[in-house]
Amino acid sequence: MTATLRIAHCSDIHLDGDGYHQSQGGDARMVYRDAFARALATMRGHQPDMMLIAGDLFDANTASPGTIEWSMTMLEQQPFPIVMIPGNHDCMGGDAIYRRYDFNQIRNVDNLTSESGEIAYVEPLGAAVWGKGMIDHSPDYNPLSGCPDRPDGYKWFFGMGHGIHVPHGADTGRSSPIHMSDIEASACDYLALGHHHAALELVTDKATAAYSGSPTDDVGRGSTYVIIDLAENTAANVTVHAIGDTP
Ligand SMILES: [Mn+2]
Image 1 (spheres, rainbow, N blue to C red):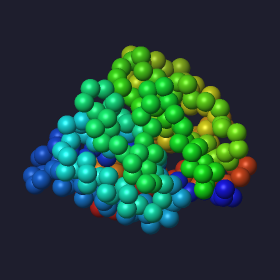
Image 2: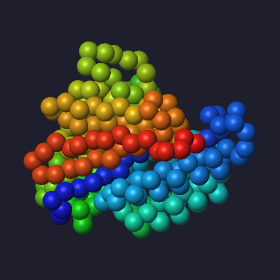
Image 3: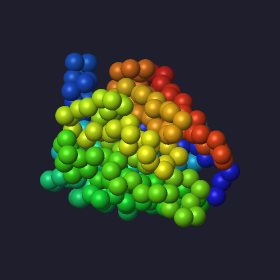
């Protein structure tokens, strides 16, 4: 276990996406790969102890085998444990990438694909990370429902979810709602969220969560990721960073 912990959190990379960059010409596949490689290098610069990827690593379950294999190699090359969940674009429904390619075979990766939720235990850090594998992006799917209490003996406890933020007092008929009340009810030291491509910090006296934004899109504050610093008996400290060169 460690007295302090630094986490890098990103989401919504959308590898093999084609919509956003089509107008700029060139091979969109390489644009996204290059942007993710640059994001990883930038995040490595913070020397995090662990990385969380909160969904939509891929733009679609039809991503090319070349890009899927490239991504697995990239993840394996990172010098820290990585915990990830599927998003709506790379969900567990149908011919899911994560049913054809076992990311849990990567030595430093835990992919949380269970529909009912599961916990990855990162023993050297004394950390536990909970998340679910989305099958169906629908209004009935609640990404944070069933989040358990902190496992006994684990100093750090994180949750991950991929869906739309619903503030207090608001309602939505949209898919995969993440209600602020669910965030505040969780036992997690930090909730790593994905789906919104603009970064958004959600910090109250009851909980600390954030949408990291996307490191391959430039809405909001640019191409972003989040660094979270944790220390004993203090709330997690969340900082949104933008990558220098917007792809
Ligand atoms: Mn999404």
